[in-house]
Length: 136
Image (tube, rainbow, N blue to C red; front, top):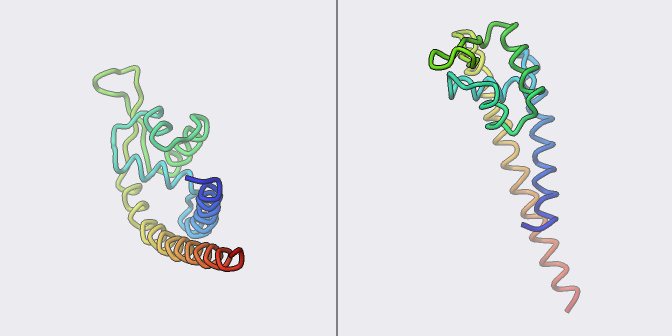
């Protein structure tokens, strides 16, 4: 992967963050909360460190997101039955419904990003072809 590819990837990530934040706002979710909710619904019984590791998220950020989801009733904490010192996370029915309501928004953002990525790729291809013709 080239430096240019990294820049393009970061641009798409920033665009995804921006678009998703706007779309999720109406559901009372931030991007971090949505990411955590997605993970907890997909992997019930995950610990805080599991969530932070899986989402490549700072533990403090994961904790703030979980705290907010617990406060809104989307997620609950419980002692791990196998190790009572370990706290695990589970979605509530309201949390699962919130995830399902937000999913079409995320899918729409994904479709928008796909178009943006294709456009960027086509533009880069044209620029490369043009520079190849002018340098000959």
